[in-house]
Length: 153
Picture 1 (cartoon, rainbow, N blue to C red):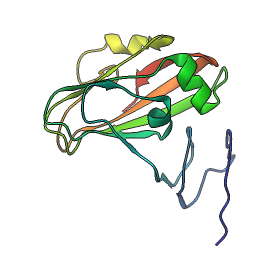
Picture 2 (picture 1 turned 30 degrees about the vertical axis):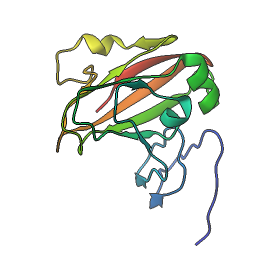
Picture 3 (picture 1 turned 120 degrees about the vertical axis):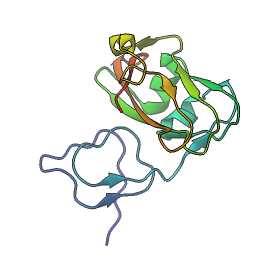
Picture 4 (picture 1 turned 90 degrees about the horizontal axis):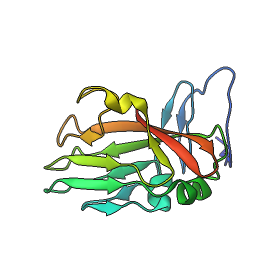
């Protein structure tokens, strides 16, 4: 079996078959699964670095309530090589945490209008601790330095 490394957008007209492994950056649509070879742990209230967010998978095991502020649109756009139309999925895993994690949008980040939805919906920025403590957020870039942030699962 061969290995292929991609840099930049990947498009498939028939979907992906099998498992993607390695450093997967960005959003891959189709069938199959994504394995994040690199993850970032943020276990206390902090501003995430662009490199931490670029892994696409953040874990938290904190016993205390934790707020994770996203990096500025400029820093995150540079780390992802973003341009207008770039879409990036970020997963937050709080299944091993003992308290909630709340996501906070920074400068040049716009909270989606879906955030006006009721708690527990796609606009919710709070991730529960324990078995249900998984969330997916989508960042959609309107330019290389600005994004809209939405909870999508």
